[in-house]
Length: 232
Image (tube, helix red, strand yellow):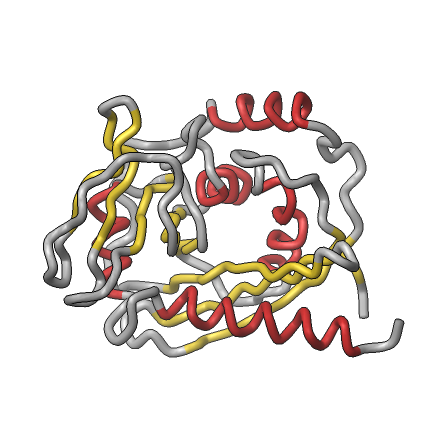
C-alpha cells in the first residue's frame, strides 16, 4: 500500500494556511452558470479518517450525469496533512483527494464535494479550494449546517431556504426528498448557486444525499479499512 506523503512546502500552521487560502480565494470564478444538469460526468469526492494512525482515505467516483451509473472510481490513502482547525479543514485532506482524482482516466466533469464551497467563514470551503486548484466546476453538498443562520425550508422536494451570513446568501438548505432533513448546498467554483441546487436534486432521486456522495462515502470507508487491514 502506497501512503501519500504530505507535499513539500505544505502549510504547517494556521497562519500559513490562512495566507494560502486568501491567495487562492482571489482566483474564484463566480459568474459562470456551470455545466447543464444531466450532461457529461459528475464526480463525487469524500474522505474517511483514522485519527489513531493519522491516515486519511479519499475516494473519487465518476458517474454518468444522465443515468447516474458509475463510470470509474479511484482511491488514495495519505497522511493527514494539517491539524484540525475549523475553517481550514480542506488543508487536512486535499493532497489525498487530488491523488484520488489523478487516478481517474475519465473526465471528472463537475466535482461534488461532501462539504462546503462559498458557505464558509471566508467564502472558501473545500469545494471552492478544489475547484480553483483543478480549474473544474465544483459544488459543495453538506449533510450538516455550519455556522450560518437559516429557516427550515418547506416540506416538499425542491423547497429551500437561504443560508445567511451577515445578510448575504452563501448557500441554501435544500429539501431533496419530501419530509426528510435538508442538505446544505453551496457553489464552489464556476457554478451558480441555482445550478448547484438543480444538480443536487437530480443527483438525489432516491435518498436524501446525492448518489455521488453515497458512492464516494462507501468507497473511501472501504479503502481505509483495506489500508488498515493490510501489511504494516
